[in-house]
Length: 257
Image (cartoon, rainbow, N blue to C red; front, top):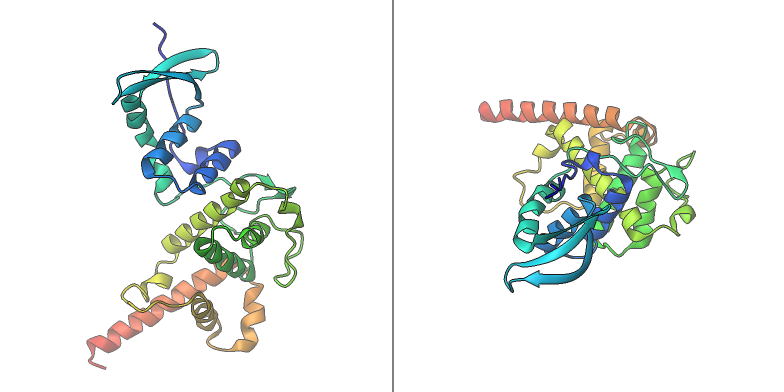
């Protein structure tokens, strides 16, 4: 009997562009966790479901093909194997975006080639898509940031080249920016600690203003200058300032002030 080795990628950065687009489509379908994992496993293992079902009612078997090989798997086996896809539901610590969308190339994976204004725009669009997943125009604007044109103009964002792309293809930019935010939280932890114990919700607009105020010292005349600076330079600077403020407050509190 021939042995079939079913192997799948074990991290986001190992997905091929077509696999990434398929996984993106699963997030848009509102699936249960189990259904998501089953479909993800079948895709990542390169399996094709063939017609036919047999076996017991509670643990049926299904026919599959991979290349020239045909074989059956019981539902229990598929569920067991699909657990290896759970990394798709955890925080993304690695990522490789689709190389190009709408004829435009992907920028640096961690946005090292972006300025602060581009990052803030992506943050705004990301949060909007998070609230309204069906807002396609905003999703295309997020694509425009992650797959930039030659020049960046936040008041004239060019999205026409993305209009023929599928939702699942464009949604990969949402997954990608989520990875960027995970890395920002990891590299700049003091930016997020201040609000950890605050039960009051803070609007995105207030958060953006707070970030600008932190790096400009409240001088609004410097905002345009800051907007053009490399994003990671600004984020690291804000993190240092947030840490200094935190340490100063701790000293004042320890002295009863």
